[in-house]
Image (tube, rainbow, N blue to C red):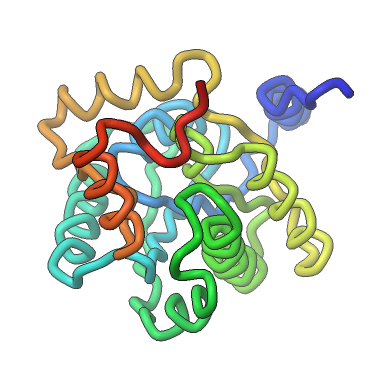
Amino acid sequence: MNRRNYQKELEEKISYHESLGEVPGLLLHSCCAPCSSYVLEYLSRFFKITVLYYNPNIYPKEEYECRTREQQRFIQKFPMKYPASFIEGNYDTKRFYQMAEGMEHLPEGGERCFACYELRLREAAEYARRLGLAYFTTTLSISPMKNADKLNEIGERLADEYGVKYLNSDFKKKNGYLRSTQISAEYGMYRQNYCGCIFSIRNKTDRDKTGRNKTDRD
């Protein structure tokens, strides 16, 4: 079975809108400022972007607030052809823990994480529909630890449900992750050392003790 080339699909959509002289509206869910850096550099040349910072998974509150400030700071300072706007979603941690109930002890990178993808992408789809934007997508696929196939699968399903197109992507392609680390260094960004939730802290602690991530593959 051949894997889909999400980068090629993205480039084809960009070329299509450019051929029509269009600059579509895009709701971009951002997991953090460092991950958004390359994505904004890339996409802000072709889309009018609204960044949605919706991450009720982040623990503790002080970490959430730190990451939110860093996201806002970066958007304000980073030059873009079409400047992005910013929306902070609700920090509804109760919703996240209800979602994770019964999956607390699953390994990082599995079904609990997939449910978290959907939680945040669903909010992005709702905002995109409410704001009348053409597309929604997420920065999550830039991380080597995130499953781009699953993200795009969820995004396409929600696109059908909400009537807003999902912008297929795998932002780690074309050295996207490397570029994000370069931009982060240029702007002196705070880079967290765990994904965000209390369960990922547990995973990091286990990794530090054993020297191996439970989800690492040989």
